[in-house]
Every structure is written in structure tokens, then in C-alpha cells.
Image (cartoon, rainbow, N blue to C red; front, side, top):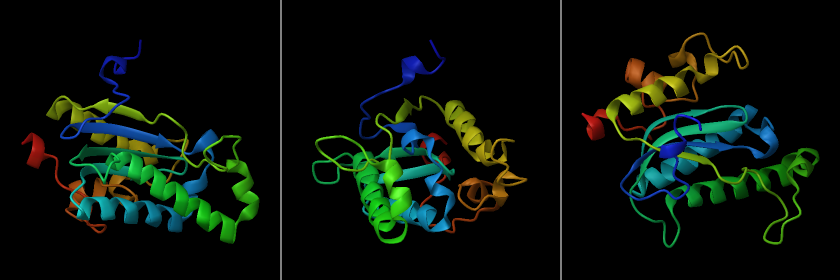
Length: 185
């Protein structure tokens, strides 16, 4: 059993903080383009501005995203994370249909309810139980772009598509991050 399996929660609850990972289908590097990273940020901002979630940390990688977030209330009948995946999936498919139909084929699925799937099923959700656990996950996601496999930045705060600059330099360029000490202070 992996260390966090007992904390993994397939069903997230409102009012709890989670470390959440969602991966592009088949680990394809769809999120290399900045326009797709901006699309993800814009959808997060909509949900944050509606008061449906609080984002404490994030990183957008070429083929996955990590978030530390608290889901505050449902978006109609849907949980905010479901709304996020649905909206970003639709927008990514729409852009691929218009601008890169060859790449769109990579996301074709044989499913009753859809023709294409952008996000893999069953994202990882681990409930954050303490400030130290949150800080451990925050360090992990901020260092993700520095891994030799990615080599996207020399320092965490240099990678534009994460919350590292918010914590290191007090920069909240995207307007979506809330300091975790407001919850775990």
C-alpha cells in the first residue's frame, strides 16, 4: 500500500482541502501550449470568483495538473472539480477541432456518453489533514517543473504556471491563489 492510499478519497467533500492530480488521457503532453495553460487558469478563476473553491497551490505540467484546493460549494448540482474537468475538456476539444484536428484523434474514445476524452478518469484526490502535509505537497508541486524529466525552470518561482512565485515573491498574477495560512495558520 502506498503511504497516502488510506487518505485517498475518490469522493471529495465540500469544506475539505485536497491535493488533487488530474492527468491528460494516456499522458499525452497536450498542455505544452501556453494557450491551454491559460484556458485552465481561466476556468479556475471562474470557479474561484464564484466562491465555489479556494486554490492554495497549483502547477500546470505538460500532461497533468496538481492542485491544492478546498471545494466550498456545488456548481448547481455538480461538484466544482467535476465542473472544472468538464469545462476544460470541452474547451480543449473545441480548440483542437478548430486548430489541430490531427491531434484531436489522439483523444477519440469508444464511449457511449462522449466521442473524445481529454482527462483520464479517476483523478487522484488526497485529503490534506494538516499544515505539514499541505506544505509537503506544496513543495512537491512547486518542484515538479524542476525535475530532470521536465527541466522547465531552474527555480520553482521561475516557472510561470505554478503558485511558487506567489509564495516566494508574493506575486498572484493569475488572481486565483489564497495563502494556505489563512486555513492552516
